[in-house]
Length: 244
Image 1: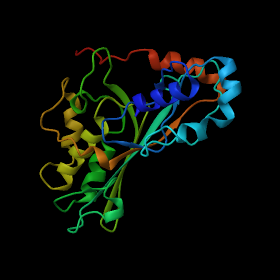
Image 2: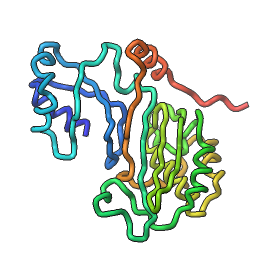
Image 3: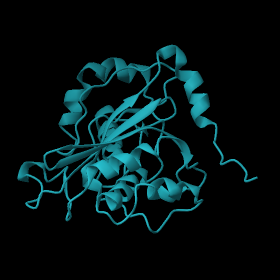
Image 4: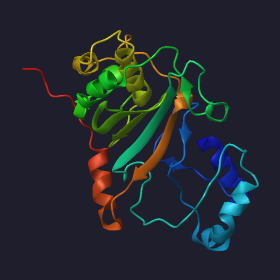
C-alpha cells in the first residue's frame, strides 16, 4: 500500500514523495484507520491540498482510498508520535464459514473455539512485556511493548479479538490470535500464552493466524503540544531487564 500511495502522490503532485506510516501492516492485513505523513513544498500544498483527495481517487488502485488530508503540525510524526494503535481480528467457527460478503475480512476457523478460555488467557498478557516469542524480529527493533488491551468477544458464531498497544512488532497480533486460538481449541491451557513471554526468541510453537482477518482500526495521538515529547519517548529503545 505504501508504495502505491507514494507513486500516486508523486504523480499528482509531480514531485518525489516519501511517506512515513503509523504502522507497517503485514501483507494481506486491512487498515481502515491508517495514518501517514509526508513533506511537500508549501506552494504545492496550497495549490493542491483542497483537491488532493479527489485527484488521488483517480490514480489509486481500487483497494486503496484516502478519505482525508490535512496539514500537520511541524512536530508530527505518523509513526513516532502515536500513543496507541488499535486492531481487530475477525473469525468465525460457524461450520459454514464466514458470510460471503465478509470473506475478505473474516477467517473461517476449522474447529469450535472456547472463547471464555481465550479471554482468560488474553487477560494474563496485558501490560509491558517482552513479546519476542510472538514477533518476527527486525534488526534494531525492540520487542518490548505495552499491551493496553486484548479482549475476546463472541456474538453468535462471530468471534472478535480487539488488541490495543503503544506499538506492535512484526506479526505480533496475528501470533497472539494464533496462541489464543490454540487455547480455544483446547490444545493449550490458558496459562500457556503468558508463559511464552519468558522466551527471548520467536517461538515456533505459536501459530500465525491468517492475515486477512486483521484490520488496523485507529491510531491515537497526543495534542499538538505533546507531539515532540511523545516522539522522544517512543524513539527511546526499551530493553529486557538483566536476569538476577
